[in-house]
Image (cartoon, rainbow, N blue to C red; front, side):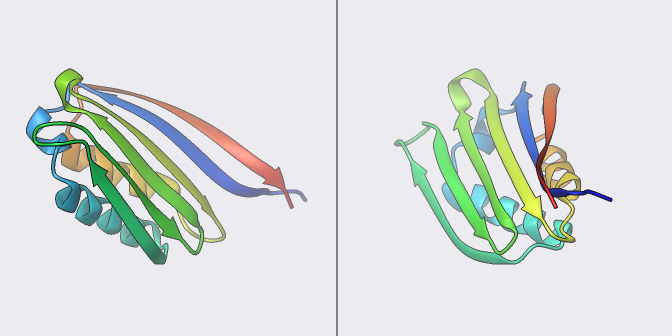
Length: 116
């Protein structure tokens, strides 16, 4: 029986309070919490802000792949990318992110990557 090498979730989260989308340290902590909830192991993180009140881009490198986020506070929008392999559960990570950001709407694409 074939199974995917990993599951990749692409989430568009809209209608978010801008204050939740501008703090790189808070977003780093959120993605770390999400990784932990999914059963993933964080190897490294890097977050960058584009200035006071501006968007943030950040990524956690995981033993199981990655979680990234890109924010547009001026539009109340965040794009989250959760890709995990092994026994990690990416949906749990996305649930933590969505619970914290409380988007008014979300659209998620689920992609099975590779076949083992």
